[in-house]
Image (cartoon, rainbow, N blue to C red; front, side, top):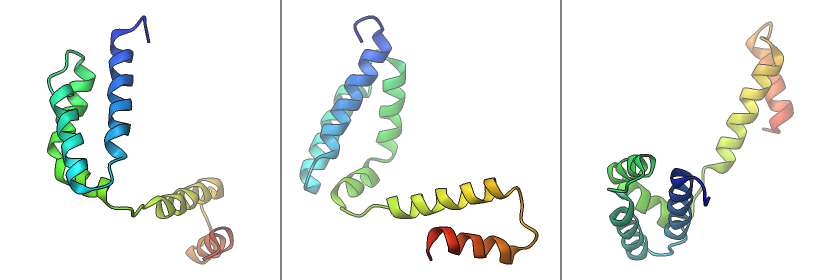
Length: 108
């Protein structure tokens, strides 16, 4: 971190974003995200500024996501498992065999 300017600032922005994501209320999330944007939107490091520009476009969605305690982690894990099964199978003779394999491995 002491040697590379870009890596240092990306790391700082990431740690500051982790602080933003720990907000518990919508007001707190909005305030923390606003502070983050104020600090990094016009940053000298182009990568950080580009990330901040993307965050500006999705600010309301991010605030709602921070406030919500719901996660799509289980669905993402199941989708990943399905992709791995398809990749390992190198193609199935018919769809019924694929679906049987999916039921066997995912338990659904």
